[in-house]
Image (cartoon, rainbow, N blue to C red; front, side, top):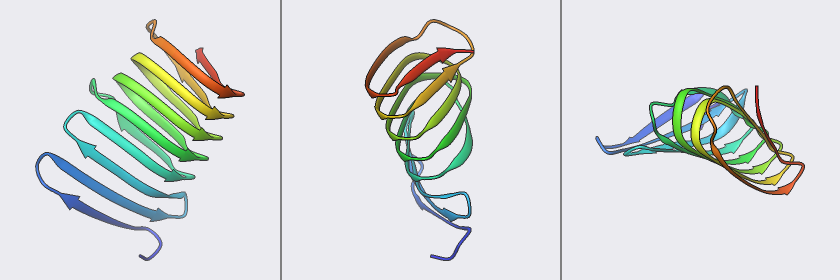
Length: 118
């Protein structure tokens, strides 16, 4: 696949987007109220819309605007900002999550993990 290309495969209930670009590579899968982000080095912004987010990989810079129901981050050297979430789970190494408001339930494991309100 050429640099900068996007492929979308799916139906009305599930969609998979494959990204190969200068700012990272990987897939984004959308199924129902869940978004799964995989890969490395991605810099992207998503709308929370009360959805569940699962982010896997390395070197991501992800922003989630609005409220997410849950955020599950695993991998290494990732930074995620979510405006608000009911639940935040972080594992791996050198991962950070910041949030703007609310009092999410937080579960963290690994090395150099941080979850902070800003």
